[in-house]
Image (cartoon, rainbow, N blue to C red):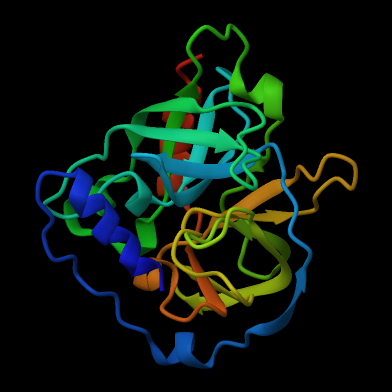
Length: 253
């Protein structure tokens, strides 16, 4: 499903090497995937689409940080993995819908992924951060859109709201579901309609009914770059590697 995204990045990056393919374990194959409930599409200011050359190709969300400019997405949306490089020329459109960027486009810079992803395309470390700023705007992204908080080491079983931007749609698809453990460092959720482009979409728990902001415990990615079935999505587990990278980005303030 989401692996087709790598073909988009190959156009932008100078050369793509073959990434090692993660292998499903028996535990992953048999872990319970609780039926999810799709909900009507809507836009959330803290969630948006990532663009390259005028086309959206991934999903990202704003997470709380001292500098107020931090984005969370899948590592493969920012870096091609083993033998590859960071993508350039990315922009972020928070709350994007129907061809409209209600808060404008924000330039994405300073992308950071775990060493295990950059060195060996480790599917257990398919998580990345970047910063976003808008020319001529003195406000921080977070002050404009609000932000989710980041939870690491929070376990596997959660009631989540999952949001992503399929390549073929100009509005996000949203689903309520229950995540489960798919492997030692992998989460899984059954949610229909999450096709290519939804990579990086946040897994949010306990959203505030008024703001829809909550705590993010995963992003679409990990096993098979998020999965090869549009009705089942995966996430790398947010462990100490993710916590360390987040603290590094947060400390810039």
